[in-house]
Image 1: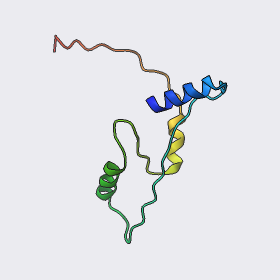
Image 2 (image 1 turned 60 degrees about the vertical axis):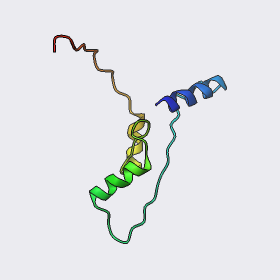
Image 3 (image 1 turned 90 degrees about the horizontal axis):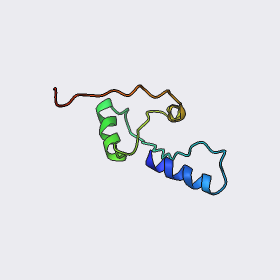
Image 4 (image 1 turned 45 degrees about the vertical axis):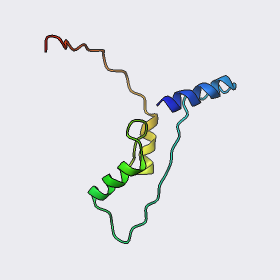
Length: 83
């Protein structure tokens, strides 16, 4: 994310070159008298985060996925003019 890139740059400029990446997380605890439906969870998700800059994770244990590394996919081109 842009936030992560800037925060990591700041740490590197402060001499912490061994830090590979910084992320920010917020954890919400929702208490309900009855279990929430998937639809209700989706509605909550929409109200609690900005889809453009944030991700919602169903469980804290899923946070490790943010730090996984994958090989970039090969670049492809789409000929828009040809349809």
